[in-house]
Length: 372
Image 1 (tube, rainbow, N blue to C red):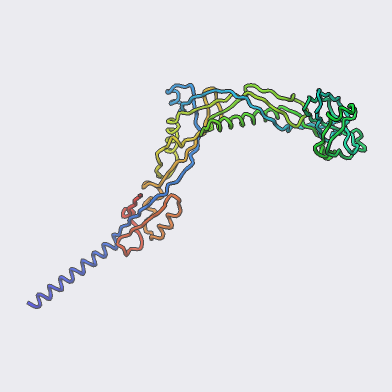
Image 2 (image 1 turned 45 degrees about the horizontal axis):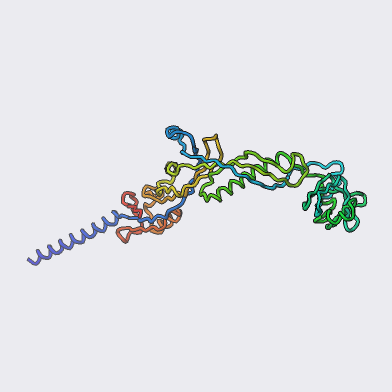
């Protein structure tokens, strides 16, 4: 009987140890891993061009894959003073020009001065005007001057200039003024500025840009949806006039293009689907965050616009970055190191079972990925 109990105890012990060994072997070779990912949303600046049509039917707009819009017109007047950039070689007396002085009239009648009128500085230096001018009461006019005697001329000091040929009583009220010292050095190169078509074209562009910017700011618009064109303009100088500056007064025709907000949001949604985010999920499109700017006009009813939107994306379980094959046979530290390669992961946690296993299973089917 004692031997029977002994054999039974040995058998039970053997079975228990065998079961423990088999269990340990099972857990060792049939490990599992769970990877918990907390994504960090990323913002992708989405920019693309589209067409806004203001007079097409809904069917035409759909066929053209365009956006419905409305247009409103207005006219404003704008004035600006612009620098002249065009130059030409000086000739005749112009080759001797040393600079510009102001002729001021504090008298009671308009004063006309002929070309070559003599102006004398306080040190006795005399220069002549290069053209005839008429100075209104209370006004002043700039005029080029050249030396009376080029051979002895050194410089014209800054200060008041007496107009020699005027009556002494008139000289007190009508006089010249040099704001700075003038010499031939200041006119090195023998070139003078004159008003050319290129200066006028540049002024047109600048006055339109300034007027449009002011209109957008004044209206508090969130979009750059105004374009302008010059309806008419006038200049205070003639084409070819020798001058440093000129003033343009223009009537600007403004066009405000308002695109349909629902169709703008739909255009963003379609474009977001085409963005390769490798399995990332995108947030719902917020129409209030859609911005657009008019680039140019194709016609009176068709306009190219640039649409921009801050698209929010985050990693999803279908992301290539989170493919299970990327995590097979890895330690927890290796998985952490892999996660820092992207800004799209805020936190990652790895749970391996049994607990004594140091690496994840080599079989991807034994890995579970959870995205919070």
